[in-house]
Image (cartoon, rainbow, N blue to C red; front, side, top):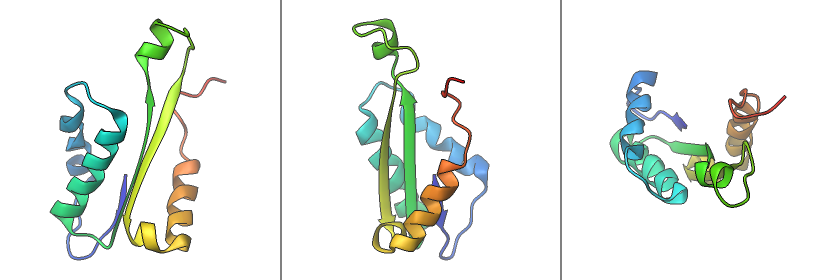
Length: 104
C-alpha cells in the first residue's frame, strides 16, 4: 500500500489496521478495491496505490495442489492512476520488496 499525502500523514500502524478488512472470507479483487477506497476516503490523498499478492490455500491444498500459488491484484487511484511516472515509481519500489512467498 502507498499513498501520496495531501494534508494528512498517518503512521504504518494505522495502515496495518487494514487487516480488519480480511477477517472474513472474501474475493481478493474486492478486498483490494476496499483497501484502496478506504485509504482514499479517510486520508483524501493525492493518490493511492494498493497491490495485494495472496497465497491461495485452495490452490495449494485442493484441486491442482500447486505449492506457493499466489495471485496479484492492484488498484490505483488519483495521481498513481493518472500520472504514468508516479505509477512507475510506485511499481519500482514494490518490485524491490522481498516477496515472503517466493521460493528460492
